[in-house]
Length: 117
Image (cartoon, rainbow, N blue to C red):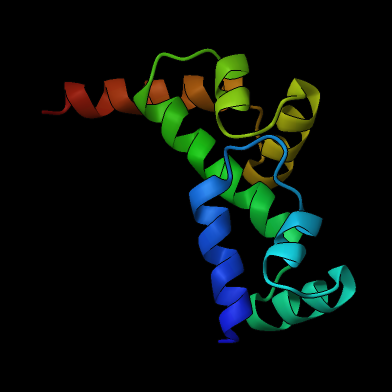
């Protein structure tokens, strides 16, 4: 893997929760133009950098939905998505359900698993 893309992946994993983290910032951090960064990232990782960043944030949100009592609004802020409407839209696009509906499903599955023990 190109070391610049590896560095960008490391930055995303470490700083995804910062609401001001943008793909352009990642390109600057690895000293590439935004278009070259996008091209290299897509080639190395298989998806666009913006989608990877969004997916990382949504994965973190799923963990918080499962393991915390934070509200959906608090979760959206804690994973770096300051606009709740964008969070809901991205979550539903990537997971197939809204965060609130998925939390209900996850809670139901957890209750059923505890009943079987």
